[in-house]
Length: 478
Image (cartoon, rainbow, N blue to C red):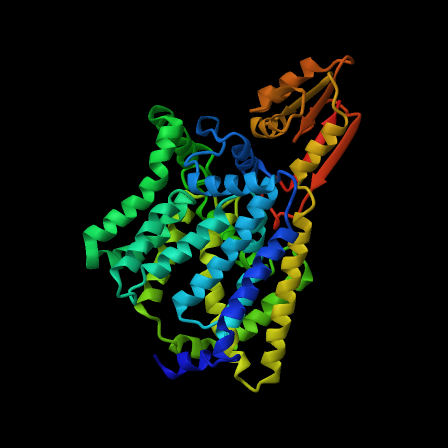
């Protein structure tokens, strides 16, 4: 360990306050997420998890494969106790945020009383993407927490085989929370596996068995395999937004960068608020002033394995996840980038340069403002949720809704009574002309009918940096 690393560990508080700091962080993480709980279904993915709280059914894609049994089981327990699945998801998100912060600091050897440790806690607690996903009806935040814990326990500096085995066990559990995060664990698992190959392999298999065996018994082998085949084919070859269905590499790279830069840390992108530009300038100044010092910090074998894991995961999502339309896939990378930023910011604390300290204060203030602005906006319904509210208010026996099948599924699953007319292509849109009559109300979501003047037209919006799914939707009434 060199001088630079020791400098970043300079305690700001007494060691006796170590546990008190973690207690405060836990209360802030859970309390803030409960305060920003959302009470509406914001998109199709969230709908499937909300439905799984009432009726867990893999065959009905409630939720979609790989069924996320560990997450759903824990969420259902909290739902049964609280009577609110919205609060259940937020409670899991708050605890997951705390565990992510805790294990990341432990993994990097940061004390919560050090400048780098405190800054890492602030950056992660106020991270916009992590906060939004903590309130969303999704397992992503819990998956990052399990991933962080598994990385910590499989770390090379642990000499006790049982502790390393716990890391392998959690890797198996991760498959039942967020299967797509497993590639990020591969380098760390490979490094740790040779020490007790059989014991660690058994521990990992036990982690999978804990959730896979009950899932098979509950769903049935044939039904589970059919759901897996259907979802896998759709994800990788059809609707999943992978490199097979979204082939433009430049677009994929640009949207991936936007997800990390703008969605991941609330930094400036074309069309965003000027505050995000202030955050970006302050961050650039801090990184530029400390780049030479940062490069001198030695990384342990553990952090090297994590770094390689980040590269593996980055390649994985670039090729096989929907990075074009969904920013949440970059979430596991955010904690490690936040750790890097924390080291850079911690150097400013120990300097006498007032300009750089002012830049650090500006960074924290603007960073926090952007995040709070987004989570407050998140409490208001998304565009598709607004449409559901709009149509529910004017529901009648004559209502007919024409839209793409996914939107129809979203509306029908929430009890909107209507005759649903699917629009899959231009031919379906053209065929709607034949259904126009004075005896019924036709609502078209998406595109207007050519040659027909709607009697009412309305467009619904939400901030795409709150949720990338359908940020603008138009509704036409005939």
